[in-house]
Image 1 (spheres, one colour):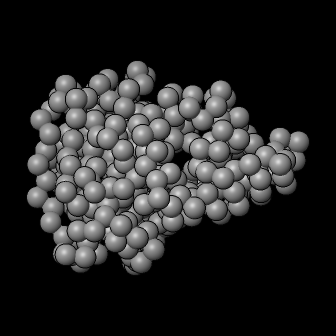
Image 2: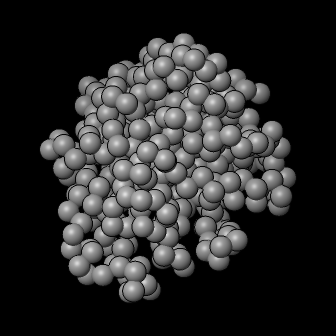
Image 3: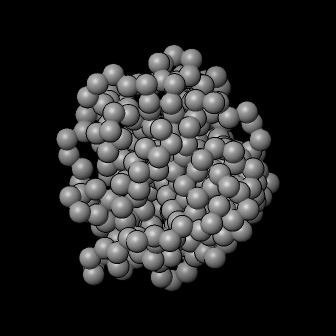
Length: 320
């Protein structure tokens, strides 16, 4: 599909990628959304907490929302999306990954960028137990990578999945890591690392034989975390093996579901290989939009409705 030209032009301050990113992550607030939590027990003995919000009238449509690294279903980019889907008559199921709902998960493993088996479990549960005939996926950052990988891995995607939106996607995880390790992103990387290590210490209390103080002391960068924990806990050889196997870029060519990818050109988290020009041009099902502005999951908009929230609704409505 031809690359989409975006018309997004925010106020002056929000033309700064860093300002947009920080505002969205630390300042923005979304009010007026009521969420109801449901626990999904998984076949391996672990659990996922799902936070539901509903349209004013009974709906046959649901949007499954997937957050980013160290996020949760209460982040403004998730609650803002849920609120907007609800306004057009679509329910929202916001997924908290393993260990992200405020409670440490039960197993040594947790979540990672390529854990599509957990997304599949949520989809299968909804198909089996709920009334929905139209399902939409919307993922942010890590959740966007998971969305694209799920759709392109070669499984039989259920016919009920009508479309997907992926925002600020690190389509090539190693390319994104290299950006995060640059001085311009030091504050973000350190914040991610701090939260990840805090969770790892909580997990150490449950599995002291699998993670030691010496291991944790070796974690100086996000790559170290993936070498020491992510890869070991999830069956990868090392961090590089994890990045190679979990990156969505290699799966985009096989996507058969109408999909919109929105990556800002001034997103400081994304390296050159995170922009799937060739893959989108060669796949009629994939729409790739590159606004000049937006930062990482930023995209400020008037009335506290972001550009990508409006864009997602327009994309979904065009699928009706």
